[in-house]
Image 1 (cartoon, rainbow, N blue to C red):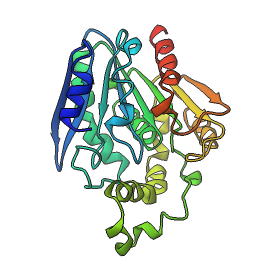
Image 2: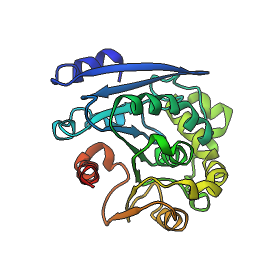
Image 3: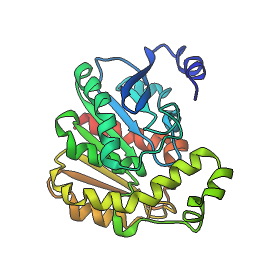
Image 4: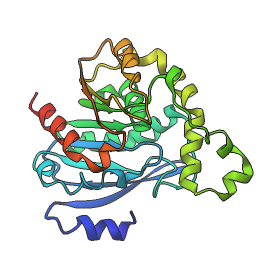
Length: 257
C-alpha cells in the first residue's frame, strides 16, 4: 500500500494517522501508525509474503482503536522498506526493528507485540533480545521449530537463477527467507529461556502452511514465560487477513489482565 493510498484509506477515520520512516542501514524502514499515544500500542509483524498491509483491517478497526494504538511495519526487504533487498537473518531483522520498538516504548504506556508466521519467529527473537521493550506478546501460527520447517516442492527450484528472473520479486524474497529459515530457527533455539514476556500462543490444528506441531516446540522451549495456548480446530493460516476478530478478542482480553 503506497503512502498516498494509506492516507486516503486511514487519514479520514477520525484518529491520528501517520506514516513513519527511519534509517536502519542498509534499510529505510517504513511503518504505519494510527491512534492515540495515551493508549497501549500493538505492533504487528507480518509473515513471508506479507507487508504492513497484511494488517490493513486492524488499522481501521474502530473497536481496537478505542483501546490501542495500532502500528504495522514493512519488514526489511518487504513493501516499502527497500523492497527486494532480502535479509534472511532473524537476528538482523530483530536488530533492524529495535529502533521502532524503542520509539513506541518512549511514547506509549505499554507495548504489545504480535508476530504471525515468519513474523512470529522475529517477534520471539525480539522478546529474547529486548524484554524491557515488550510488555505482552502474541505468537500467531509461528514458524519456530527448526525440525518441522515445512517446505514446498517449488522452494528449491525457485532458487535457480533463471526461474528467479521470471518470478515476482515478493515470491523471491519469501523464498529466500524460507530456504534459510530452519537454520535461522536453529541459531536462536538456545535462547528461548530468555523470554519472560507474558505470551499467548495461537494456532489452528489444520494450518496448511506452518505445521501445528510447532506448538510442541513452544511448550518445550517457553519455560520462563507465562503462556496461554489457544488452539482452534479450523483456523486457516491466513486468518489474520480475513478474520480480524480472532486477534481482536485476544488483545482485548490481554489488556484487561
